[in-house]
Amino acid sequence: MRFIFSAVITLGIVLGCASPRPLPTASGFPEVTIAAPKTTVAEALVDRGVTNQWSVKKSDSFQIVLARRDTSTKAVLLLGSGRDPYPEVRLTLTLVERDGETRVVARMAWASNPDSPHESVVEIGAGRPIYIDVQKSLSEVKAQLEGHSAIVNGSAIKQ
Image (cartoon, rainbow, N blue to C red; front, side, top):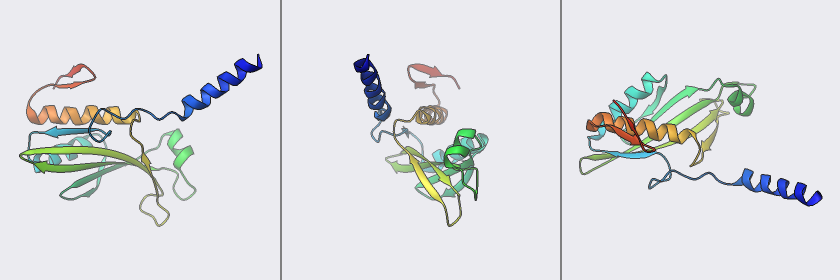
């Protein structure tokens, strides 16, 4: 009986510490290459973000940073502070244009006490479930700009 208990505890620790699998992209993070100029892609990404209640925190020729407050109980308990109970989730989109195509790579982070001297940023590592939704959204933008249906996890996304 003691052996079974020890085996279950050991298995739980090993599985709990296992790293999630990154996405099957060059970077391991959500990314797409869109056959469109960078300005067109950037406008479509900002439009999608604003439509989904994100605000533009920063925008330059190579990056767009979208942000919104996370008011979920889990975020408040894990990342909130006495100064500011609601952390900010940030989506950083890096755009690189080459040969008439634009490569977009996305990364995410949580910021506690955003825009203050006490700001603390925690990057969300590759392979986390939230990145599947980001990849789906990027694929939808690609399909919209290229004029066809996106395929995500074997399913067509109709426009």
